[in-house]
Every structure is written in structure tokens, then in C-alpha cells.
Length: 390
Ligand code: SAH
Image 1 (tube, protein in one colour):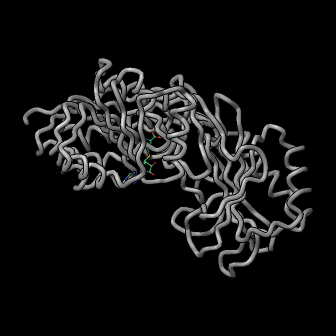
Image 2 (cartoon, rainbow, N blue to C red):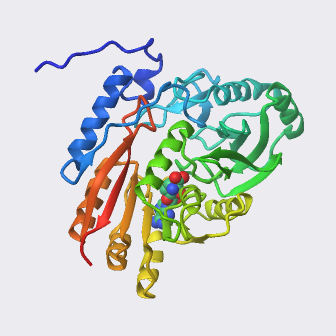
Image 3 (cartoon, helix red, strand yellow):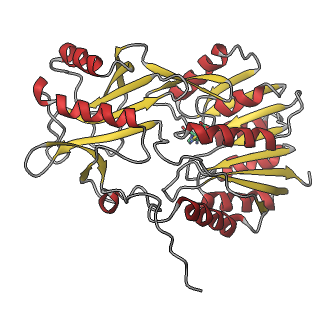
């Protein structure tokens, strides 16, 4: 059957061809949701029922974290934007339909200000120049705005007058952080960090909890959909108030803390030390006394728990795109929690891991896709699993 091609809902993005970030933008939003639904069914439909994907009412400007690479075009003019798909050429982008508008404006202002303050953009070929990237994070619920200037050196010419002018033009900025990345790398952030203005982090509110977010910590990029994602995850955990819960790959502790109101105690494990510091701080900030956090590889942590004969009633797991690993999954099966809630941002690795868990005695009951990344081909999904046999 010939596929019916629907018209896109708005003017196509002028950067579409070069940027490659919004792979689905030629489809209407409705069609995108159908496409994602079919993809999830195709990947994991053999394991369980797939509920109807939860879409957004307004699928634009949803990204609370915006990153721009800085460089120069052929004529030497400073440009900022995104890397052309599968290359390191910068596509100049001032406005993007999925990014936070405030963040986009701040980035353009910074680019325009550079020559006036005799600051240069970094050149990847020669490793010369000052500003490599600008990262902006905004708390949609608190309106706090963090600007991270990623530079090749800690020596910041005209720092004071530059900051003064930036803050005059954008009084909404609540903190500015300098991050030094002097390595030849495609990673955006370097190790060294210095707070130039404000408290060095922002806070946001999600599912009734307040969270501190640092420059380097992971925080879900679509706050509207995150509320729906987390509520589904907690719902799938069927907590009654007494359970021991593990929040694996916990980031700044969000899922565990939201679940902690309905649980006995929660242990969180996360590899990124900055995120763990945020998680510990966040528990205090919310006066939550039944959550503990450990900085470790989730697989090693699980192995240790299993070896010490410890267990949990419910395990939330929210690994990165690569999915979990055999160390983690093997120990999980060995520990045998009653219920596992798997939050995944990649249906392919989810399908692979569900294969392992199913063989290990778990049964997937249902899956709920949530559209966290409209117009892109990324898919988020929550799966409820129960232990069938010991
Ligand atoms: N659950 C959190 C974070 C999910 S993102 C949230 O909803 O915000 C995945 C997290 O896994 C990231 O914070 C990343 O730093 C962490 N991570 C990646 N590999 C890990 C590993 N091997 N062990 C523990 N955490 C890991």
C-alpha cells in the first residue's frame, strides 16, 4: 500500500538538510507518533503489550538544555550552531524549533559580543582561539538560567566587562560557569570548572521535588514530558510504602526521590560524581530522609549487593543509550527483585536487555512509550517487568 504523505504542520526548518537533528520533521506530528509507536512495537512487541505513545500538546521549543559549537566560517566570521550531521563542520543556527527560545537568544548575544571584547572562537584545525562551546540550561519551573562558557584556556580576557554586559542584556541569567576544555576531543565539557557569577548551578522542579542541576550532571531535556515519564515509572513500580527500592543509573536522583514518598527506602547508584553530589544535596533540599546515593558503576554495585546477599523489592533502571550490561543484568537476575521498571531511551538496546531479563525469569507486562524528543527519531519507553520464578 502506498503510504499517505501528510503535509508538515509548519514551514520546514531552513537548517534541516545540513543539521540533521530533526530527522522526522517532514512528517506531521501525528505521523511521527505513529512512526515511533510502530518502531517500539517492532522492537519489543514480542515481549509485551505496547500502550499508545504519550505525545506533547505543543511539541516545540521543549529543550531546556541547548548547546552551541563556536567556530569561524570560510571568511573568518564567527559562527555558532550545531555540527553538521556526521561531520565536524558547524552549521550556523540562531533559532531552532525544538530549543528553548531564551537559550537561543543568549547564544546569539554571546556570539555578537565576542569581537567587541577581543575574544575569539576556537578553531578545531589549528587548536587556536578562545570560545569552544556555549551551553545553556534553563529550569522551566523556576526560570533559573545557567550559562556555561566552554573555553580552551582559563585565561579570560576582559572577563569582568564581558560578564557585566552579558548580564545587562540578559538579566534572566542566574549563574555563569567557566568550563575549561583544553583537550583535542569531541566531548563538549572539560574537567576544570570555575563559577564566574551566581551559585554555579540551577534548580528546577519536577513531580513536586526541587532539583539542583550542575553543569556536568544529566537532567532530562524535556521537562513537560519528564513529569509523564516519571509518573508512569512510579506507577509501574506499584509501591505500597514499605519497599526497598534501587534507582540504578540515577543521575541527580530524580526518579528515586519521586518514588521515595511511596517507598520504605531508596538506594541510588550513578557513575558521574558531580551528579551524585547533586543527588545527595537534592535529598536534603527536599527533606527526604530515606534516600542514599553511591558513586559507582551500576554493574559493579549490583555485583557487590548480590555477593553480600542484599536485595531490593523494586529496581528502577534508566541506563544510557548503550543500554545495560551483563554484569548488571546478571546480578539483577541473581538478586531477583519482584519488580523491575526499565526506563529506556533506545528501543534497540531495550529489546536486547529484555531478551536477557526474560531468559532470566522475568516477564514484561506492558510498555509505555513517551515522546520526549519530538521531530527527532529518538524514542523513550518505560517497561514494567515482574519476576515469574525464583
Ligand atoms: N535516571 C536519571 C538519569 C538517566 S541518564 C534521570 O532520569 O535523570 C543515564 C545516567 O546513567 C547518566 O546520569 C549517566 O551518568 C549514568 N551512567 C552511565 N553509565 C553508568 C554506569 N556504568 N553506572 C552507573 N551510572 C551510569
